[in-house]
Image (cartoon, rainbow, N blue to C red; front, side, top):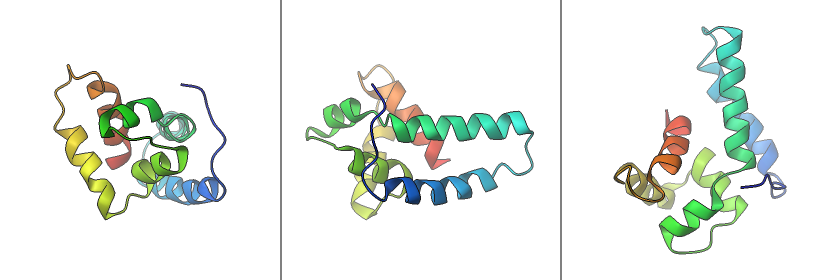
Length: 105
């Protein structure tokens, strides 16, 4: 899935969330910190819209995907419950579960 332009404001919110995520890795080496940052930026820039759309049965745009991954609201918790309950053989299973667990951690 190709990278996309973030909806207005999402980049600013993401950068603040990313600061919090990276703060959890202050005691890790620079390589690990960089890997975490790169991974989170990759998820933000290519948030698996196709898999979220397939999983939810409704169109998911970049703004909704960013919110689900990085600043979820109460109604987004259904996505986490569904994804964490997926068997890894499900077409969406392994990839989307890895992305959500990476951020949820």
